[in-house]
Length: 493
Image (cartoon, rainbow, N blue to C red; front, side, top):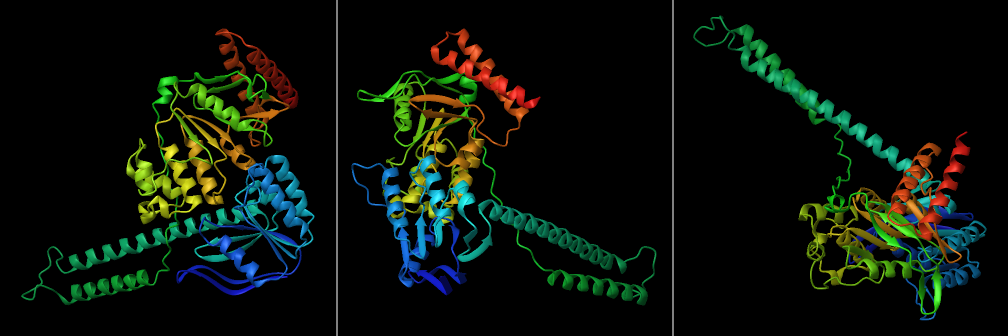
């Protein structure tokens, strides 16, 4: 059993998180979500201290030089699962895992005979495993039945209801204020009616009574206004407008054409990849850990670094000035004004005076957000993002999705976050058996007609490229697109 009652967690005397009551009696899987710094990991540490039969797998793990991040994470998970504890706490367990290992972990957790609480930003993973969501909001823990998608539906409905209540409140408030204004105007005019002899006093008993009645009505309405149940305006994200000179510079041209085999030393990782990216396209590169994704990206950067302005994000990225503030670091290379930069930082939960913090005082997760924003607002022809969602909270991942979707230039992303890829990319290249193949339909929401239109457009583009000089990779892509078109046409019949 896992039970928490009237718990208040504090940091330096200030409330971090309050839990009124949380009780779990039988085996289940709970997804714990909340902004970075909201107290998720602190809550885990408290559970470890207060309960005996608990295993905790942390997010930050001690790594061996001979092991990759994915291998280290899997070893920690294997060790944790072998404990068979009554309560298993997992802090971002999918970080560094490829899709096959995420599937492996999903199966293990579904069969686990105990209580599992998992902190994760991976929404697809949470949809697969979670039966309940614990969400930290305004320093309080709230519980929701179902998986992450169910939680989002509840939150969206809650926001819609708040917006409707606020709209009704504002309409009623305005209507009362308009009535008060009209009654006051009528009262002011009632004692100076045209053509009426008011005598020496300048008024008449009739108009005095009328004026008093109007003032009385106005006061009653003012009282009604004072007692109106005030509704706060729901917080809405400000829209971000990116601008670009690259669109005019490159139009619909191919800006990346990479045909060279990829390898390390004498070892070949990808044979004749045939990677083609047009200006403005959003592309995902997928494959198992060790298949050559990052090596491919590094070789692309090396080839095009002189020709293109490349904004390259990766987990080992350095370059922030420790002594300067977050805002100063971002503005150094920004092509946007400070207001826009602060809006973008705010979307990743770096708000108000936090932008003036020196970088040396911020957490690792916040540093990643600053690096992402710095790249988003620089003068880049193409962005390359290697695992950008690692160490982000769920709301920041969703904000990043929105910004990438609205970003006008090309984007290449490497990510094992399935939902993230579905939401931001137009196409996906998959590394399998040392080959790179295009997965034509990335987004499951596309119906057959839309997918067919996409394929036909790609066929036209490839034909245009072949006119400039055919290559083996272009011929292969052309044949694959024709086969995909044939399949989609047969589906539509």
